[in-house]
Image (cartoon, rainbow, N blue to C red; front, side):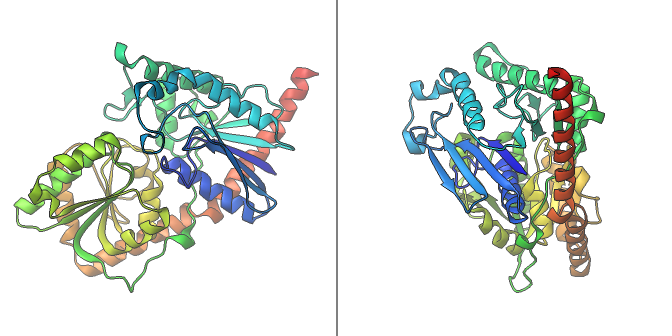
Length: 406
């Protein structure tokens, strides 16, 4: 099968996030079992494009003229920031042209985020929209975002994402939470949005008993953004330290403007126990998971983050927000812990409870967490589900086109 993945971000990239991790794992695993994979993504430097062939069955095409700018690469100015408007349609048409030049394509998968499938209707093969988290989902209120007059572009992008989803023939979601949200707020029928979890290459995320876990150490991994609950986590750690519990906090992930401001504004005393590493190679995360006692993901709302799956597989005690898909991964008290978001006091109490567990209980929770990932989210379990869906979509789409076109 020739599968094409379209994604804004694909490693190595300065824009990498959960979508990039998902697509990379999918592409590498499916290639290893004999499928042909093409990844179409954006070049970080929008002035350049390139094509990388990895063997006979794996190709990465990085497109130029993307509708964004990374200041650390191209510099920063108002005109470059305006690319999101001036290049919105032209970049998405470029995606279409690139796909049409490929041979023997069977299926295309593309995220809903960013509306990059805008012109991918009526292709001779099915296009699957994969729900990760749309831009119009307000993580703080769990409702549709409202946009002010000054955020006209964001409102325009959200409208395009909605339009694409409302007319899509094939949609999958990586959590039931998101498909339920789509049914409630966008009127989509949940029965037509199968939940197929993100797969984890479990062999990459192992428990290293030789690496000593630092006592009272807390880890956050992921993009540093307001909706990820970073300030809640810092405040909870501060409450613990004020009560005499000397926890430390390591924040791993790309900072952006918000993260840089948080890092700059914390006082000198906080800097003694709160460390920002910035972006790191994904494989480096294993050492962080193995060396920290707790991994904490306090997002306002989250879909099914790879970092939660990976850290549980790697033996970290995981505390996660009860809003969204992480509640589908974790059984509270058995293989991890859930807490309501945006409440530093409750998070501090939860952290205190977990840190005070005896070592036998902690180890049992680690064992149960890894077992949960191995039995439910491993590539060996999820990939067959995905391939079955792909094959059914291909068959039904060809039947539909045959009936429609005569």
